[in-house]
Structures are given as structure tokens and as C-alpha cells.
Image (cartoon, rainbow, N blue to C red; front, side, top):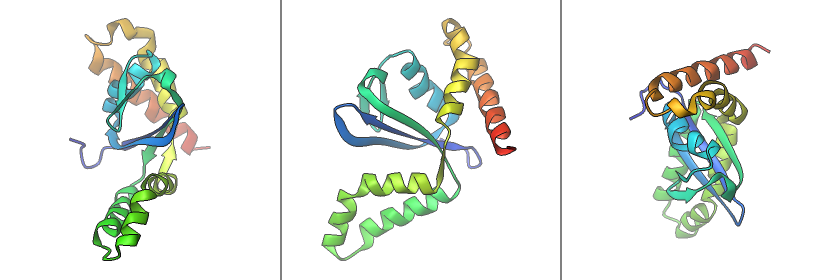
Length: 156
């Protein structure tokens, strides 16, 4: 469960042979590293939005830090899909869901792909052989590298 004040991220990926994006939201940093980035960088199988993929299957992947406003706008989108009495409107929302969700991520998120990959390559990759026995220590180190990268970017 994500702590109330903990930052959460979305993963946006597009497979090479399928233009429909895979989008997973509300992933906390350590889980993002453990479930997505470590296997992505190791070219192992991992899951995004319930679909199994390997890094070589993907045309692109983007990590987005969700802003506080993301939940409100996502809830508004879902409410509009459920509550409209107009079935045509509900159908249109369903067909455009990925497009609308991507727009929400652009509006209420910040692309931090480079900073997340840098945190992995700095704190975890050099010690990948020790990943399982020292996972928490390495993930904590990655959090520190990521936080510092974001702080430096924010001050420029």
C-alpha cells in the first residue's frame, strides 16, 4: 500500500508491434525499481499494466512522477465514464481512455525517466549481484540518488 505522502509514479510504455500503450499508475519508487526498472535494465521479463514484456519488446518507456493533482483529474475522468447517462459519450470515453489518460499524465505529471534510470545505474547496477541479499539498502541508495537528481533539477 502506498503511504499517503509518498511519491508515486506512472509507467507509460509502447510495444514495438502494438501502438496501444501500457499504462500503470500509482507505483511507489521502491516497487518501481524492483518490479520494472531492475528487470528492464537486466533484460528480464516484467509486467506493465498486467502485460508481460521485456525491454527488447518495447519501442519506448517513460517514467512519470505523478503530481498531487493527478488523482483528482483521474477520478474526474472515471466519474465521467461511469456517470454519464449518454451511452455514446461513455463509449467514446472508453475508446479514448488511453489517449485521455496520457493527456492527464502530461498535465499532472513530470517525466523523470532519466533520473530514475540514473538512480538505478548509480546505486543498484554496480552491485546487482548483491541485489537480493541487500535489496533494501540498494533501493534506499537509489531513492537518495533520485531525490538529489530532482532537487538539482528543481534548483536550475
